[in-house]
Length: 232
Image: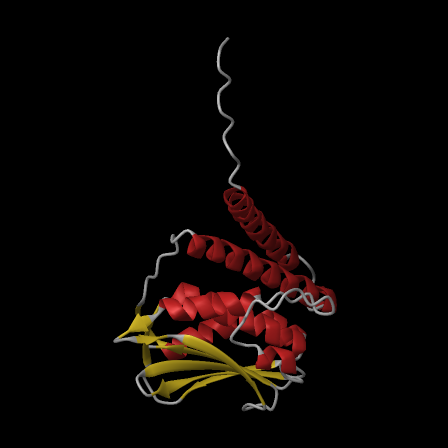
């Protein structure tokens, strides 16, 4: 009697990661086709409220897929850190530019500033950009009329701050911000994964015994919520 071959176990996390990767590619093609369609519309039909909703949700979905892939790669130690010297003002400008259409469609003023001319940073622009982009997306959802990005030095660390003029972070989030996985909030759909991802990306940045970190607060520069990421 011949032996039956052992059935290979299914690595579900790998299946999910592969599926998420395919979803991200499909979403990218969908966004590209949508942009081409909008360009063919008459000028008076291009700036509609529906366009703002669609583009916001595009960015939000893309951000979530990027986070899921990033968290998977972190879990299997396959997320490379590629830091380089960057002009911080150009970095902030690029982050806001990615959201320009949505900000305009929602009548939200986006602005940025650096504390000193020619400020340079040494960090992974793609990874930190995904964190900052996620925070901007979240701020767009809850702010009233303005979002402000600021960068400066805190000792030997670069600190990037994203402020809004909304109602601020919930008290429970501030009290438990050291535990970013807060569970699903049914009223908001929040899982805390975005903050967990941001915290892990910050921690990947280490220099001279100093490790990056994030923090949340209320009553910042614009009176609402404030997110900060420190990068040594």
